[in-house]
Image (cartoon, rainbow over all chains, first blue to last red; front, top):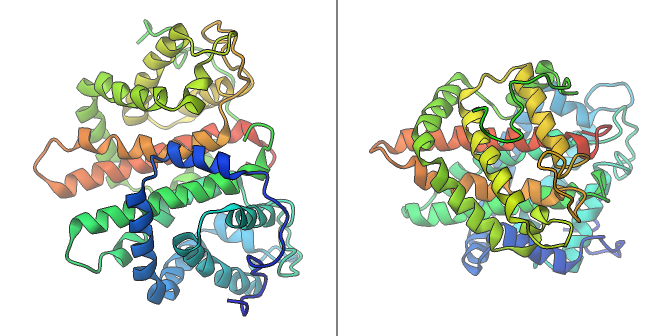
Length: 191
Length: 191
C-alpha cells in the first residue's frame, strides 16, 4: 500500500479528536451489529478485485457535475488531472480500509487526517494549489446516497438476496459513519 | 395542520440562505429524477395513515439511546416529556411535508427554520429551557441510516418489489437532502 502517494495511514498521525468511546456511540446510533461487521468484510472481499470499476463509476459521476468536480480544481479554476488521479488512488484505498481495517484509534486518526484534507489542508497532500478552500459540507453529506447506491450492483454477484441485502446494509452504515467522522472539522464545537 | 404547536410552515418566515438554484445542485448530486418525485408522492400516500406507527418506531429508537434522547433534555438534564411530545407532532408533519409539499423557496425557508431550531434556537419553539445548546451534527448525519431503513417495512404494502424499491430510493434521497439542508447552520461558510 505504500506506493499510494499521500497515503499515511501507517505513519505517525495526530490523534483524532474523536475517541473510540464516541465511535461506539456512533455505532450504536447506526444500530451496528456483529452481523454488520461480518457482512462488511464479505463486501470488502467482493469489491477488492473491482475497485477500479467502482472508481470509474464514481469518477464518471463526479466528472459529470461541475459543482462536484470543482473540488479538484487547480489554481486556474479548472479541474486538475493530476489532483484527480492522486485522490483516486486514495479513494480506492478508503474502500479497502473501511472494509478490512479494525476500527480503532489508528483508523479514527486517519479518518481525521482525511477530514483535515477536505477542509484546512485542502490540496496540501498532493502539493496542489487549488482555488477551492474546502469540500462543501452539503455535498459530502449528499454523497452518502450515490456512494451507497452505486455499490449495490457490484455486491450482487451471488445468488443469495439476503446476503446482498446484508452486505449493502453494512456498506450503507459504514459510508454514513465515514461522513459523520469526516464532518468533524466543519463545526468542532457542535459536532 | 394549524393545530400543531410551533408548526410555522405557512407563516411568514425568514428567507433561507439556501436558494432554489442551490437546491437544484443538491438534487443533481442525488441524481433526483421525475420518477423519484412520483415515487416519493406514492410513499407519502402509503405512509400517511401510519405516521403514528412510524413515530413510535423512531421514538423507541431515540429513547433507547441516552446520547440521542439527551437532545430532548429540560433544564434539569433529564429528557422532558413535554419537549418530546411537542417535537413528535412536528416530526410527523415533516414526513407529510417532505412527501407532499412542493420543494420551493417556502419549503426551503421552513427547512432552514427547523435547522435553526436544532442549533441557535434550541428549545425556543416549545419554550423549553434545555441544558443542551444544539443537536450534535454527527447524530443528525447518522440519522440518515435509521430514518431510511426503518421506513422500508411501512412501504412494503404492495406486491410489486420494484415499486417498493422505487419508493424507498426516493425516501432515502429525500432524507439525505433534508440532512444536507439542516446542516447549513453548523458551518455556513463551508456548507
